[in-house]
Image (tube, rainbow, N blue to C red; front, side, top):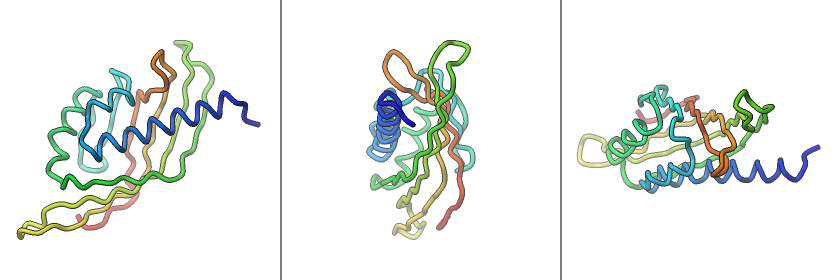
Length: 148
C-alpha cells in the first residue's frame, strides 16, 4: 500500500516528465535544467540522435529540433515507477518508464511538409536532490516509427 510520501514522489516525477515534454515541444531548452541533473547521461541513439551528458545533449536539442516544425506535441501515457532503496550516496532513486507518442512535422523535400511519428518509452532513472526529483539518466527506447 502506498503512503502519502510515495504519492507525492509520483506526482513530482510525473511533473518533471511533463516539464521535459513541454520544454522540448516549445523549444524552451533552459527549462530542461529543472528536469535533469547537471551530469545526467542521455541516450537518443535509437531515434537517430546523440548520446552524451546533459549539457552536450541540451545544446544538440537546441540545434537539431528547429529542423522540425515548431509545431511539436508529445503525448505521454502510462508511467510505471519502481522506487529503489537508498543508493550508495544515500539518495532516494526511482526507475521510471513512460510511454510516449511524438508526431512531428518535417519538410517533405518538395516544398511541403509531412508528419513523422515515433512511439516508445522514456526510461529514466530519477534521484531526489535538494531541488527535487531530477533525472540523472534517460534512454529513449523507440518501439515504432512511421513516415521516416
